[in-house]
Image: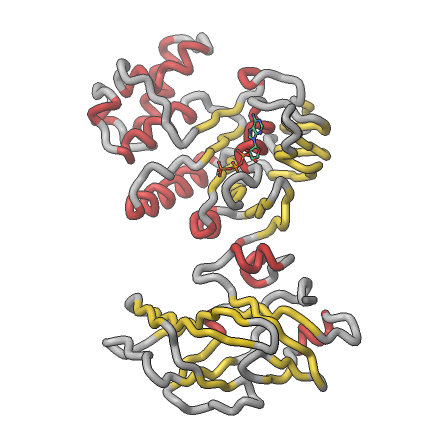
Length: 362
Ligand code: ATP
């Protein structure tokens, strides 16, 4: 069993920076777990605490039920892959792959077997004689992953491993990595600042902000039931619209329209709540050609500031203003209209879906 448990683990650096607040977290055996959050939120620190490159200021790290808190990285049987692949430039791919095994004094026949297997898994067979300088970015990344695999570790810890690759290759490598992880079934913790990457890779995702886990859940959980306003705004692209609103006579009054209060929200809100922030995903606005502008049923008209036509999707940007605030909102739509002509006097009809039911107070 290689589940990883953090029990009240915190990290404060000598200069006083609190990189990780006291954190409890369990990563299950065999799962692909993603840590996501903006730059500086403590993702790498959390990973280093697991692998042993940093020591916690307090708390315990356990792997497979065994406490490893004070152990050196080399005694934790984990393999870490960094953004900079850190391959040895003077060594061939074969020697790069075999190097961790040489250090670990694995006998030659066994080392050869593992190198061959990793090369096969990662389709590196043809490249074993090359030096890193003669490889593409994606190939180098695969060698770095291969070096982790040959060690047959209890867990892989990956710190933004794809960020040096171009967008198309990233998507390709991301899919390969997920397939490889499923095949090997090795517990994997993957760090990224990219919410799309997190959403497409993770069985479970932890969203981190300012050294604090905001929410842990499946991609669907995070998208449909964000625990707070930060998660609501961070997960999803384009971002969720967060609009000032009021509850009046059992209805939700948005700056630009009114609509019946969604049932789930009515039950979740404390009695007497008046001011709320309504979270509405762009795809929950319906763009129409002028019909349904009833302002008592969520309809409204806007003059778009910008229309982004991305092929199948159209995003309409517009301003909304309330008494003392204004916001930029984005509506998304699928279009069958070849030229995506959603500009000019487009009317929008909003259908009620307020996604955050736990953080609905202003
Ligand atoms: P990024 O996505 O930019 O890599 P991150 O989420 O991985 O960021 P960390 O590298 O874990 O963030 O850093 C968390 C916080 O701790 C940051 O404020 C950072 O400046 C700080 N920090 C990291 N290492 C040290 C250190 N050795 N001494 C002092 N502060 C540090």
